[in-house]
Image (tube, rainbow, N blue to C red; front, side, top):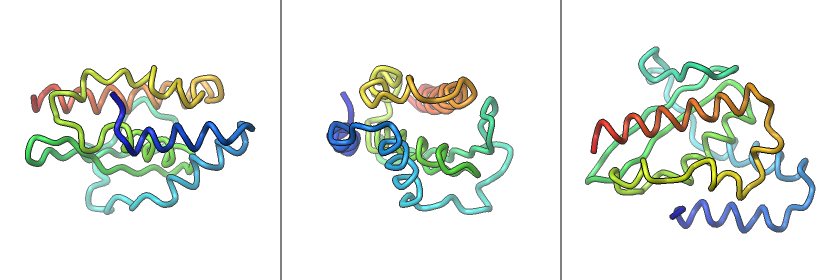
Length: 136
């Protein structure tokens, strides 16, 4: 059910045996992601429940879901980029059917994130699902 972009991340992770390499990959993936305009970093786009500052700005165009995001923490910015790969471009009605924990589990992220980062990741997924369900 994952997007082609997400499948590319999964394939890349298969070649990275050490968690430090995977961690660096996620950070670099986040660095390559375009930043969110400061004008969009407002209370309405801020995700509560994250240890760091996180903003998600969803869009629905022609029935397709996408979002931009940003964080003040590099690893979280990378996680946002991974979530973008998982969700961006999906028909809005399919967003809530994605098994995000299962898909992210394919990357082994669940085993290496702190409890706070895991909670923040769950909060981001919940926000994405909420916006998509309201738009569907």
